[in-house]
Image 1: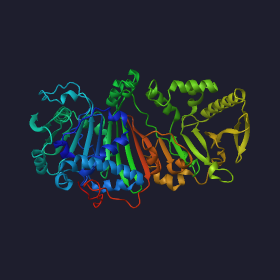
Image 2: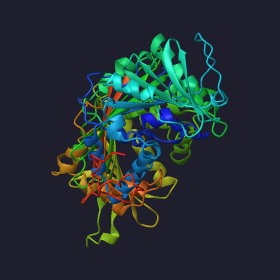
Image 3: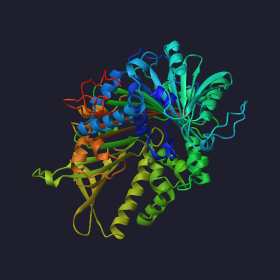
Length: 595
């Protein structure tokens, strides 16, 4: 990919911000596909930071670093199904042919001898008037300089070869090459039609920097020389090492406040000033992706702006709810303190049009339906661990056509300080809720017993059991809605979700202690329940996934850490990528093929 950006003009189309239109995971894979033909097995870098972090301007919207190890890319192709492999291969072949093959470049000959362990691609926000010294050379590209631009950083393991490539680029089909300098750095730049200008510079013989805008090259040089790069951005150097892994496939970084400013300026969906101010408390979100034997792992970290007055409560008290639900549980989401979670949600979501539901609407809805005050009557005693689980219940005949499930909510009504007082508050609120169901909605509120334990059933006016609530272990309240699955949690099941192989192999054991976990058996859930479409090609991705697990924790008063594992299926009888000759031959193997 590198040499074509130096030597081949391309049309530059105006496009909306990638950060606002694609998810981080999509960007990681999509942008990474372009780097496939920069592959060569290397010894891993010893740096804990994103490659090129000392060159990428600190206000970059997004940055992604990807390995140049062909064995790792081959391993990525082995995950999924024939459909996901075909989709990935289609993108890889298209980018390979566009950037290398069609322009006379051969990977083994032109790229492999000098490229380093990883390459980084960054998206820069539109430049604000620069105060840096020399006036940039004016080109017909400047008219497009208000658009976001791209910077690629390619570490160089053999400076002499890289210098030769840069000094003797391929002949342009249109336009001409010009040489110039900026802050003492030599720049090779093609001058063609508007929107077709690309620049390249070699910094200290260690990094080849390629951009799609002359001004972006200057911004990168300024960041490198003036130490205003990503590496000096608040919290970056302190938090990125928390997710370091020397066998990584890729890493990414999202600049939250800069992305929020771009969103606020969007004519289609502007963010209110109140929301923008709240988002300024957050500084960054970063992650590392590694390929393992049975799937893909993401280690993530998010951190607050160092100047923010907001602090996080270091409270990691979750990790027990998976031992209260049965082995057949399809989904479980747990957290350490529901009251605190709600408070954080209100802080970041109030007035935010992008929030799933406005806090004030939820409060109003509960008040209208139940006469209960969400904060005073309910959340005031929900200070312990909580969980939401989906537990299946088949018919007595076991007919697959009668597959049903119950939604089970559990919450601990006491913590180290609340004790019996919170239990009494909880009982009073639940009794008030029973009265509302009986008097306002004409439900039958019937005391009953399950496995010798007292419960209360809500039976609708039509005679069907609608919900059941009760207590576990004296201080854990539960509510079952949907299929009657109370007998699966009372008594405490012998075979729990925590004891199952899928849970143990999917849900990370670190960080420990934790403030929350998530588990989803994708195969069984998709088989029995229709899911709403949230992303493009969703069904193809779901068909390739076995299960998803996540464990999170508050790292310190300024940051959260996450560990996510996606267990994937594997492609059988893999086919090699089509060769470059018109994509008709497939003689080359995926791990050794070159343009």
